[in-house]
Length: 198
Length: 377
Image (cartoon, rainbow over all chains, first blue to last red; front, top):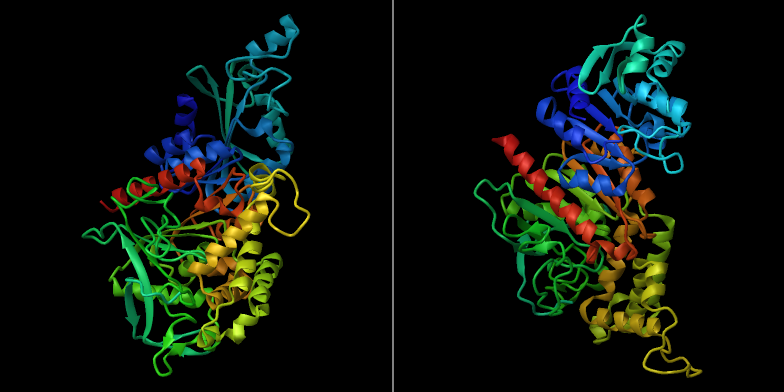
């Protein structure tokens, strides 16, 4: 978690306006507030988590990204963050489009379904993968649309979404993703972090 | 009810132009304060009361001898901690607890003003209370807070005085009174006016009181403050002090007895004309109309931080209406937080012991106070 926060924080310029979509208990918001910018908002669907955030004095709105991002004006944030949440939406494409409207830049992080540990489980055990990063069983997972780093990379090119930076994370090892190492990073990383713009 | 109460009161000498066109001056505002104003005057919170509330937010209400209406929220070691904050609450104009209202005695006639009192609005209420803030020499409030009609006043206050509060917390309210709410208010008013003792509003001249009408108004309104589930769980079809139905029109059911009781205690503490005037003010409230249909424009001048709260079972001021406020604020990039609290207690939730509400509200106010103070240093 800490590595992901650090990477996200390094992608953000100081004193900018940030929206964290699916902010959970506000850990990333707190981290960014201490390190980067005071001007940060959150959107979260769980009442309990919203209450936790508000209790910490964080500005968070209870709402659903699929229906409630519309209310923010175009480019009203310098950065919109979607941390490990894209796979849980009914319509990830719509959400990405909404994020790109609301934010000048968007940071998306993706638990990589192409990671070799994930692939091995399906290949050898023949069961849906359960890992540290993807702890749910098939019957109770909130993850409706799992994808791989390569899937997201290809999605961006096919939709003409500019990728400014793409970073792969394995444990605490950080590396850049590019066209030539894409297949390898897709196999050897548990998390992909993308800085994109429409 | 124009009782001889020892309430704190100031006379506003500035003239106040009301929305109806009339001007008032030299009028009283009754208020109460709790806690101490700090030397920087940075810890003041103005609480706005709801339809039948008054200035006695906390502690013992000297009129009813019951706890103040927001005792769960305001007091020592409560979510709005009076060890830390200086809390001010004024009786709204139109009210009957010492502020200028229809039961105020007209000095030239020696009689109550009655329905010669001008129609007032939420805007007028807020402007009158602003005079109190000036009188207390508070340049900027830390927060303005209120539920229901109190929440409407919060919204109007920030619209009117965009740089006078750092934080605004409208709870269980709306930016525009709905047809359903106007309908319920009209039902209450008609009940009062149908009482033969109402005498066109001049009942006090005849030493009368439209108690029956006012009690019915209160009973009807009280139902709207609860939820279907809450009523069913609390009362169901339980009988009142009897084992079987009596085949008559006495209060067979507990719910009937409860409503009758609510009606009867209400008439002892509230003036029927005030009920007419204040419900009218609520019905007239339409903040977006004041800004030519664009609610966002009401807030575009402000840097005030907002925290909007609604309750799941509140069907009088439902989450959807509270959310409209959030949407209007978001669309201008204002600083707004929002949560819908889970509760079966209906609209009344904001007045009751709803732990997740009290905790979230208290934690938010305290951590925001800390952040704002730290920033200043």
